[in-house]
Every structure is written in structure tokens, then in C-alpha cells.
Image (cartoon, rainbow, N blue to C red):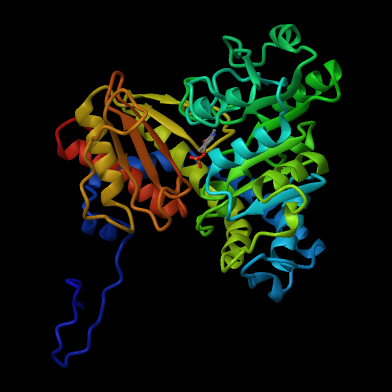
Length: 444
Ligand SMILES: *Cc1c(COP(=O)(O)O)cnc(C)c1O
């Protein structure tokens, strides 16, 4: 322990002077120029931030309304052990999720260890040998390539004789309806849509667009299930894909809906049959949702869900603030400084390995945890170039917390997301710029 009190121990009473806002930034290493740039940029975003706060307010009340309707009581915050029979807290939480996403049922479990597992679970549970999975938003998220078997992997859907087809998004980022009509066939059992762009170079899909595509697919064949990979999209808008035509939404609890408090977990919300199928695969045929001890995590899952609308709003403001800072300095940003937002990810093209490294080090140094650690690029499995990552998180790997990463290759794009609170994310972004300024990579 090397953090000693700064009180000296003599008997004179300690009086701290009232400081200006800038004084604390100065102590944290932010120069006056960087601070003032932040002030100017934020001033121009006031109206936009107000709209985001209104969406957060709306979604906050939706969450509370669902908790009232499901009569969440203190006993629901406790947990079970062993088989987890009659886990009232778990069952009630699943009812709350089903209310919020407007679905018949939901599976919300700590036994689902990440978003990829939730997606795999939903796909394998709802497809049978001979069926075809059709992605209509182009190439899916990286980790799903092995799930599907696009890259051969033991246990992939391909090994279970489930085939895969894909329709690219149009040049303008919209759905290719003609292409979808051509690819849907009598074996198509499930259509997958990825809401967020993830790390792909395309716009994120709005819930309205997703609804239109879901209804189009159902017009072709009402039996086809439309599943949406909802990662990074929850509570960004006032509606969710299952409220406009999609059958199932799937996501991770260490992203938006966990509100930064959920220590792990994933969710699947959808029609009764699809959710039941997923439960039978997660536990076992015959047991389904009846088993699965929640141990001690329920309180965090409820409290995280409760905080999620405002945490998501913080992350959204952070992404917009970053886009406006960096676009103003001449860097390519995606989405751009004015674009409507449908997820919390911000890409900034930094054009040099030095700038990418400095950016990530600035984010890391601003983190509440591991601020003294210096991120280095490393050869991550599954990537063809070194990757640098900044994440000083309370929950390991949580990307609703302020985090940044990027592969060290042309054009040196950093993907930035999260921020449990806007004041912290704002400081993190200013610090990323400060590190670039200190290295002489940017002149203000
Ligand atoms: C994060 C993410 C996933 C996978 O989630 P993990 O929790 O990392 O396994 C899938 N799809 C999208 C769009 C994501 O952002």
C-alpha cells in the first residue's frame, strides 16, 4: 500500500480551498488547451445531450414500470444454490426482461458466460440438422465465425449439418430486400440480424430498419424466426427490436443491460418456444428453466438493469463527445460528429501506430483500476496483427466501462466505447488527447 493520506499529522486544521473545475483537471495532467477544447465541443452538444437524457428518462421509467408490474420484492435479490429450484429472484428477473423487451419469455442467466455463448445457445437450440441460418446484415461478429463454422471449428453449427447463407447490406448500409427474397428458401429456419456494426465498417442499424426487415421476412414465411444480436444497442433508443417485429433478442450482461454492475451473464428474450428451446440446451431436455442456481449475483443483475438506461446514456454522450473532439482535429470518425446514434461504439482513425498507442494509454491512465499500467500492443489470438487495448475495469472485459482497442495496422483505427459515468468518460477522452499532445502527435 503506497497510498498514504496527504494529511501531515500536525495539529493545524486542514482547510481545502474551493477549486475551479479546471483545477482538478490540471492536477490530473490535463492542459488548459485540452480542457478548453473540451468546453467548446461540449457547449455545442447541449441540445443533443438533452435529447439523450430524455431517452434515458423514458427508458428508466420503462425499467421501473416492469419492476413494479413483476412485483420485485426484497426476496428476489437473494439467490439459490444447488439445483436452483424455485429461484423466485431468477424467475422474476426473467419476467422483468420479458416485459422490457415485450416478449413472451426470457432467459437471463449467469451460466451464460458472454454474448457469444448466448448467441450460440440461441442458434443451436433453435436450428435442427438440415436447417439453414441466414444472416441478412452481412458478415457476423468475429466470434460467430467459428460458432457458425464459417471458419471451421469443433462444435460449430456446420458440424451439426446446419448450413449458412448471408446477404450483404447494401452500399448505403440498408437491407438488400431483393437479396433476402432470393436467399430465403424452404430450409431457412432462422434469420439473424446484427444491430451494432461491431468492428465492421458499416453503419449501425436502427430499430426501425430492423423492424422493417423482420416484417419483410415474416411476409415471406411467418414460420421463420428473426433473431437480433442486440449487443451494444439496448436502451440507446426507446424501442427494442422485439417491439417492432423481431422474434428474439440476444445480448451480453457485461455490456449495456448489465449497467456495469452485472459481473457476468447473458440474456435471450423472445417467443416462448425459442426461449424454451434455449433453456433445454442450456440445462437439459426436460429440465429447461426449472434449474440453474443464481448463486449471489441477482442483486447486481437487478441493480445493473436499473442503472442501465443512464449508464447507456453516459456511454452514448462519451462516444459523441469523442467524435466531435477528434473530427474537429481532422481525424476520420465513424459515426461522424452529427450522425444519429444506434449503438455506443465510436471508431476514430488515428493514422499512425504512435497515435493509436498514445490514445489507448491515455484512456488506461484515466481508468479507476490499473491506471498505472501501460498498455502494450500484443499478438492476440484470432487477429492477424498486434492489438492494443485499454481497459481499467471493475468487471474484467466489460465494455460498458470506458475501454478502447485497435489493431496495429493501417489505418490505425481505435474502437472506443463505454463510460459508466459521463464525467469519467469525458476525462478519459480528454486524457487520450492529452497523451497525443504530450507525444507531439497533435498540435492544438
Ligand atoms: C460483444 C459482441 C458480441 C459477443 O459478445 P462477447 O460477450 O464478447 O462474447 C457479439 N456481437 C456483437 C455485435 C458484439 O458487440
